[in-house]
Length: 281
Image (cartoon, rainbow, N blue to C red; front, top):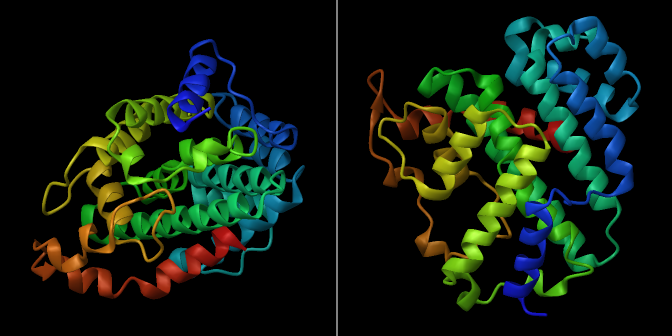
């Protein structure tokens, strides 16, 4: 079975609602589903999070990261952490843990390496989008963080299926130029995002990443995500462009409040590093 046939197989599964996730991810996804209930308040969320030590630890670590230092730090409990972070960031942590759990089910070292790099890329995009939302586009930074975390979940899903469908690992240029393959990958990406109950606004931003070009100076969540993806320090292993094709910060010439975009992003390193560390370790 070649790559096009493998993608068509997964598209057919998605059309009848048969996307399959590893068993150990189901409990984590149930937490995600519960968080989306309108009846879920902070107390309920705290109880849910404390059922999973990995999620609880990650939530407290992020609340104590430099990116959230404006809240004073010194957070020692889940409830306070959730109050600081908000539900969008909490959802980001749940997805982060789910991605780590998916990786744990994989035995093929090539796939594990691609997954690890893809998650590192996603964390860098999320952290940079969070910073840009606060300093550049003035949109909700927690939504920007969540969009960065989930923007490659379709890629994670395809990698999770690659042990049984190894042609999915084929990254030859002919596949990159195959419009039908790209359409199938986008269809699968949308299906996985829907399965994870990703809000429409975030899905729209991710579609901007797939199809759009940023407005300069950046204004929307889609602009923020697109720029963060382009400028992230770690490149996606599923991005088959040559280095020369990728844009650098100097390619985005614009000013925000009298300062260049490059100057603003040049100050991001400490915030971004702190948040990336909290998401990935």
